Length: 433
Image (cartoon, rainbow, N blue to C red; front, side):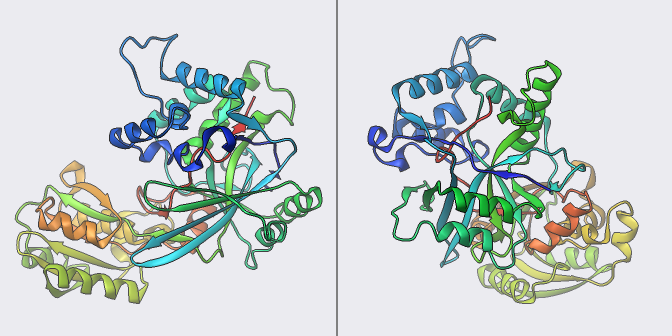
């Protein structure tokens, strides 16, 4: 079973850097050039200089954004801007945020988790990974010797007993606090009480972990460890490279949200409600629910209220119509995706791409291209700007889908889950050498 450990994290000395909000950043994979510049301007000590250093003219194999990141890290450690914890700790991490007018709070804790290859232990992925991001992160790991941002892991704990053990130690203690660029409030408490640490580690020993976000970082950590082992540089089972930094959240946490990821499809010009209904009619019951913004919201409200994976919403931009399509039977998905499990074939995103868009609407082979958004307002804005031919409203996958498919050693289709909000980089760093 996964082994969870307290560790001596490396954190910013708030007395030297001022506001923690000025030195933290989102994960590298959601930072565009504009946000990168904004973070650079926030503070000369912003974690962006480590997490996503900018390329510069004249970069070479020996002087580049990875070597610059390592240089900044060494300098900040030398100056005491970054300091190692005096004793091992677990870090209670709380995020308060708003979605569609409702406020939520998600709670978990940061720990070291012993690395296990997928398929050989009880740590499960649920998404596919790409070679490019893994090569980038490996170069950064090798240059700095640190995990700069956590992997996001989920574990079963119906009563939240592991988290509650930590919460009992922080009552009446003020947290460190940072607000990110989206207005999410992030709070951190440091727990060093040995008895509490032992209790939490014991409570976690028999629980599987499902990776929610950070698959590239986790696989990179495995690669980094394996390279050290190949070179004979891994100093036994307690070497820090055997572990990675992970945020652990109970699947029963009331603030754990999986947002839908709606699709904005191009490559299907001139599609109207009539042509959509005709194309989908062989496998779906298609019903027109309205036009314009009111039609979109009516479709989404019905999808949300039903909570089913086999009902999809479609907006045909050419005529402004909105429709709901309910799958009639499983036969077509069984035929089109025979190698996948029934759980995988029953996902809304699987039904949308495999059956509706690729097969029935003729979008296979790259003809149909998708962009991804999460909020209905974003869908409406794109439709109003006629930025797509077809808008698709997709029900979000639920935790039981993630658990079932990951436990079967399958990965979900791309963009199946969006765990909001992202975890901040820079709250706690984890040395791996």
